[in-house]
Amino acid sequence: MTERLFEGADWDFRTLQRITDACEEVALKDLGLDVYPNQIEVITAEQMLDAYSSVGMPLFYKHWSFGKHFAFHEASYRKGLMGLAYEIVINSSPCISYLMEENTATMQTLVIAHAAFGHNHFFKNNYLFKQWTDADGILDYLDFAKNYVASCEERYGRIEVERTLDAAHALMSHGIDRYPGKKKLDLRAEEKRAGRRRQHEEEVFNDLWRTTVPKGAAKSRSALSIERRRKLLGLPQENLLYFLEKSAPRLAPWQRELLRIVRHIAQYFYPQSQTKVMNEGTATYVHYRIMTMLHERGRITDGNFLEFLGSHTNVVFQPEFDDPRFSGFNPYALGFAVMQDIERIVTKPEDEDREWFPDIAGKGDVMGVLRDVWANYRDESFIGQFLSPRLMRHFRMFHLHDDPEERAGIRVDAIHDERGFRRVRRELARQHDVGFIDANIEVVDVDLSGDRRLILHHHVIKGSQLNETDAKRVLQHLADLWTYDVSLIEVDANDKVLREYVVSPRPIPAAA
Image 1 (cartoon, rainbow, N blue to C red):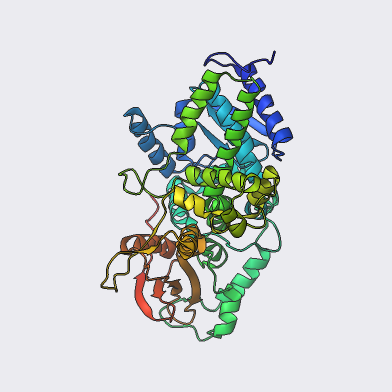
Image 2: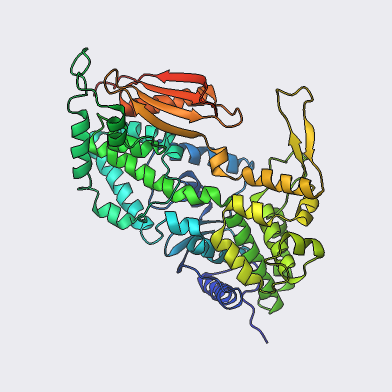
């Protein structure tokens, strides 16, 4: 008789070990997953709230915004206005999965299957995470960052450090390298080089600024040519934190290091923003397969499986477009549905599937196809390649066209025919393309011979201009770090100027 993993809702750490071993056997032997070593941590509800506040990262440095988030989530949780995640998982080696101690044994099994094997496999094998993250070094780097921020607070004062971190956090989404370089980031090496990294950069920096930083009201006579100026400054540059770290004329070395820390952490999260649907879809598909196999093999009871199905159904619930709860597509629901649809196409294709997906229809090797998909796609390409007409009919997808310049108003722009399906799929994929949804802002020049104004361009796509209030707030932080005026010019595809923002730095408060 097959031994049950547990009886009832109670569990202890021996039970968790049995559960982990059983999930690992299915994941590695049956599904062919490839994962980092696992580290399971059991935490309280309050600790889960604390993890929320610091975006799920252990060993994070202190900042007032984390406390604000903690207070908000705690108040909402105590009032019953929100629930808590069953788990948080960290992309590191070992892969750390935080489990709520309030979870039942069934829920702990679900969480381990979902996080410790589903997310873990995706983190280790997807090409974006391979290009951009250093799972072996992130924990050591976070420890270094926490200690460095604490030492800066002790040496330079909490307010000064907080002011720099506030500005860096405001620019965090524009502190990203969007294209992989020749050398993969090594966070352990970054930590070791923290004290001696800038000799070459400072030589270039001094050559650029020695005769151009003004001593008085008069302008410098030694203005560099536009070509040389842009070359020395590495322009155009879309990574604003990198540019400030290397070129801001009045930042202290410790401030540059803080910008570098925030930039590396922003880069760490960059793949996750591009793979939300795939990452959650993969983890949900994996936990569904593992829980189903454990039930089929008698390792969990019918009651345990029904409890799991209730939670799983809630996770993949997708409100209809006219439901008050609708706020877009649930990434768990969409990702899981496409994974299951790929399984159907690979094993039981219809004529329509053979026409739309000739490379995988009827191939038979479900996990081989899925592992290849998980490794080589991001959300935009995943949806653009694998969203099928059958699934679009299932979700009742359609596309609305709303152009304020057209008198016709809102109209249905795509229906359920071949052209309509391709239009819907293309438009939905575009909504997950960071190149389309993130503002394209870059530093284009610095007026070295005049007032040292930093000039940025925002390339407007389809008339989507910046929110005025948010733009001014973020530019204020940028100007404070640059210490001279900052100009942001919004231009359309024809380089027509649509709007210009000019912000001056705030005076630095005198030390108490």
